[in-house]
Length: 149
Image 1 (tube, rainbow, N blue to C red):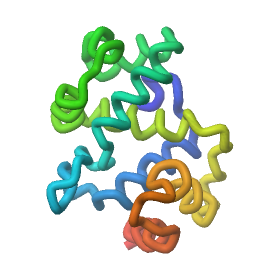
Image 2: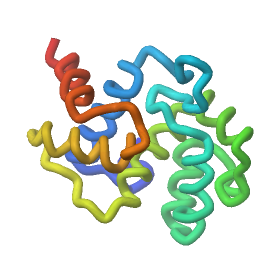
Image 3: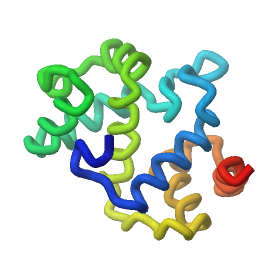
Image 4: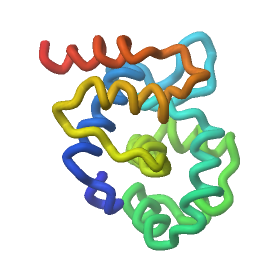
């Protein structure tokens, strides 16, 4: 998927994979306790709408790549609503992968190296979970160890 949208790198692949592992252990596609997030990447529909309106809209090639790669009309990405975004993220894991990657892409921070678990954990907390989220750097590191089990 990351290749199809033109945003693949070894670092991006690892960070997106570990984000899914941290967010849901690849078990949940709906946030527990009736939260708004959906997909194994726990993307909030409002975040997906924001990415579409304030990032993809101004990057026509990337917009076209995402739309064609996840098999949706680019009009959806140009005029999203939270309800439609929730439904699409629920049903279309390709879109969820793209939204996860785009969350990191929007950050001015460089992606940490693949073997830099501490750097990836810090980036996840700062960029993806944010200071408002309940997750911690230690939570990311602990979840990432599941990969080795």
